[in-house]
Length: 536
Image (cartoon, rainbow, N blue to C red; front, side, top):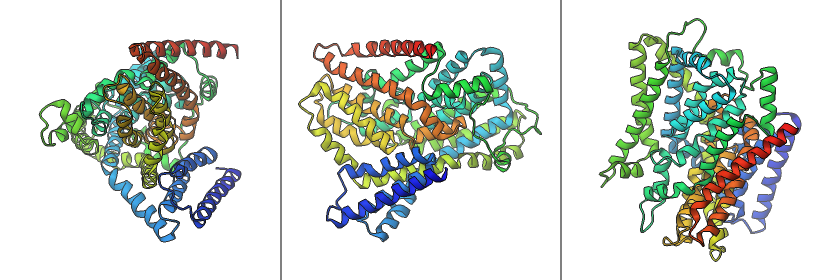
């Protein structure tokens, strides 16, 4: 961060504190349920974009939210930051943090065994082009549909050697990871996201999981993002800032991966040159299969503990991913260590050495996740949901316009707060109240809420999934945000058109036409952008 941006950040922080104190002193200090509830996350986003430094930006947003929630009292502000913010975030995310550490250890084990290098050698023989490498990354991301965190870290570590060999920048790899993480999980009935949505989306006529499944065909952003990636890889071009990164990678070989200090390199290295690789391709495949199988088992086992659960669908709708995923991944870790030792690709000492290294590799992501969750807690304390609900209440007479409006609002809230789960947790009850369950737009409205939550999360620099994608690709976080934003906004604009069309088509019972039209719009848009790119 240069001195100028540092000074600008300090001035913005000081100005925001002064404004809050002045507003409070003038007797207008009831910030809850007003636009002020979105000021802390918006400030954090602006500062992150100005300073290109995430930690301080998030912390400043937390402080501003704590100041408003605490009635501008110094003691209450410190208590909100330390206890209601950071301490509560660590407690609430304990299961996910454990899951992240275990994933980091498993990645370290696979790398240390030489299996990742073996996959790279196999890919060198079978994947000949940039298009093939991009599509292979996409396919692996789709196959790992169980959880977005698992997706980000696994796809990044496995595919980086392949994309590097084909001169695909780390920013492009981070986009491919991010775009096949949350969007895939949001349309997969068996995933931690389906379980989370099912816990929020309960109505009088439909169970949570039924609502989720019936909303899948109208989740335009998730579906069109996958279409967008495939078409982009096949057409083999880029636009926006991503084009600069790809051109530099092609011409100079500079991929944009993070530069580590010598000490960091020694700390994070898990596949050093002193150890000849013994792992084979199946030493990568088998651990991934074990991890997926055990993660599914963990989610199911936890779901079956709920009262009255007798089948798999109910188990997934009742499961707690923050409990099920740590259970399953811990069992997977033990089995993978045993497997690699029995295979004699690792010694027991090598396996144990990977534990602290895997933990260290996850510290930056865990820190940002904790700060982002703390910021969400401050936003919740300021009743952001009340403000959003009041903003939507005046549009009930324009039913055909509501899906597009819900999508736009969900995008904004998710972008500002950096959380998909928090956004659809806030909005789903509101959507269920706004739309009649007998209306043909009921499921379109639910899907608009879910799609907007994913879209805003995809664009937000303080989103946990965006952060994990940067970590998985070993890419500068703000490089990832700035390069993927034009792509995400392109799909978002087409999705907004689709929700407008869905509202209009419903008048003629032709809602199903929306998705073919959306796919056609994506393909036509990319052909136009490619022609423009070639001319430039």
